[in-house]
Image (tube, rainbow over all chains, first blue to last red; front, side, top):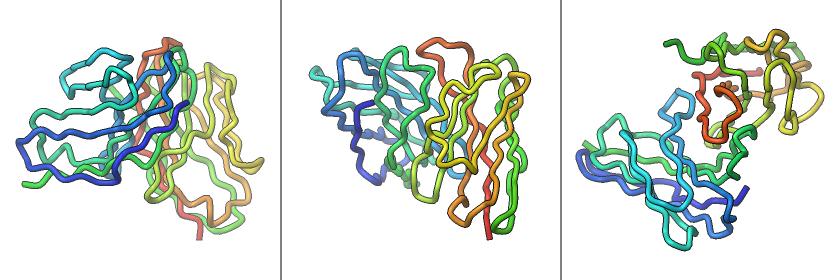
Length: 112
Length: 115
């Protein structure tokens, strides 16, 4: 699986949009971008995934650049409960059977 | 419905002892994963079960670590001759079927401390 690079930490004001970047410059054509988050003392939680089109669900939006070398996870109206470590993971489609490869992620802190 | 559960939530043991960590996956989930998370790091894959068999155990660090899933549901991670470096949070996840896009659901983890 391709390697990802994320900033170690970010702050965001409550109620504002939180934009979390991820670089994956070595991504292959058959690799998807996945996002998970981990709230303190809990297991990771799936957020969203995408291939090349932008995706949106009830939790977040995922914007993938046209060259697919980077992406941004957007939490449109951040709340204090969104404080967590956010992991960007790149993996092969059909690789659903494989274990996930987590990096260190971005520690997002939502400020009141 | 019930999520993935893990017991115990905390386990303290002494160096050299044997420990067992239990994972109850979501009912009906055929895939089960074990991960280990050290302080300040992301989770690290250990082993994956599809049904009763270990489909991928490439992440197990050495032969002191072993996992079973005899009936294709509950799984037990076993660590022999524990070392202080084994101290970590051990996470379990389960997933429905083999579809490429099925997400993994994680339990809260077991915090293992080896003194």
